[in-house]
Length: 395
Image 1 (cartoon, rainbow, N blue to C red):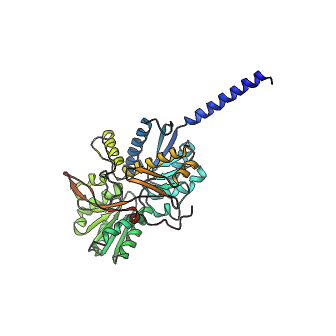
Image 2 (spheres, rainbow, N blue to C red):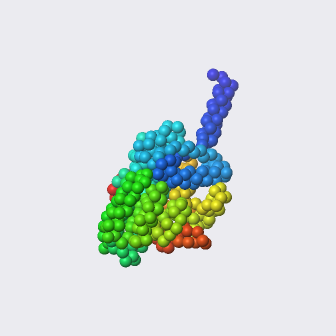
Image 3 (cartoon, one colour):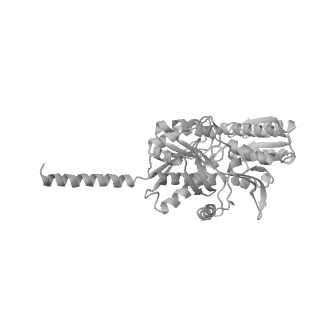
């Protein structure tokens, strides 16, 4: 090959390399959201969608992440573990290998073990089961929301001040519901309390009368509720009709949320509960979110699961920017110990179990400016709210 031909070949090769690099630089960030858009948790899935849509709209308006636009694809899981796993795999096969959106803990527990095999990464924002960052932890799964054991630590700060010692538990017959019941039992008994009865209802239960009667007959003075979505609403309305809510102190988790309170109205007044996120949090980032939210969704503020899902998107976007890559392995490495300013303040991912370290809140449904809403009464700092990593997690 003469000198001229070599020069032309070199120019052509450089052009091909430049084109490949340019194409790679322009590859979008593809996020797959496998979430419950129908069924008992359908409303929660719509909350996930609203939060993801706003976060993606905001980042794309700023030019994307390092020049990469963000694309999202949603698939319905019906909050069923087997369907969630199938839908997550379909998303990955379609190129959406950055996952989020699971609601029921069983969904996340079914997906997390497959992430490395699929070459995917996942940020959990709602699923609470302790095992997700405990015995079933995964190198590719990261959780930004509050797990059950952290909720229990927060409840303990409130429970020790309460005169009631006899408690009943009403939970969802899911990994999360039973996990929450076990965590509450451990906390209550550790403070000298007694669990009089426990009931766990399947997703989509319409008739809670047998459970309510059992609670009424148990001699319990207080009730811990671990129900969400339509199940929480159905139970609360029926419990009110039976007079149960007027006879005992009621507290819960994922039971005292903005959307549930809005639907229940006066039925929810004075109920206590865990508040993992509130639109009233006084941080610059949260004020910015509330402002943007009210513009995109007029007449509303971000509710609990919406705030936590938006938080997950903040952490995920920061990790992609830090990794300077859309490869799941690189994003996972960036997430491992990331620190970022968010709507709940400055937070850090704990590398030992991939749990985001943050504070937690407890409060009561009260009237604020003529509107019933969950109101923070107790703020628990991260060093108390988030106990040490579970040694059962082997990453």
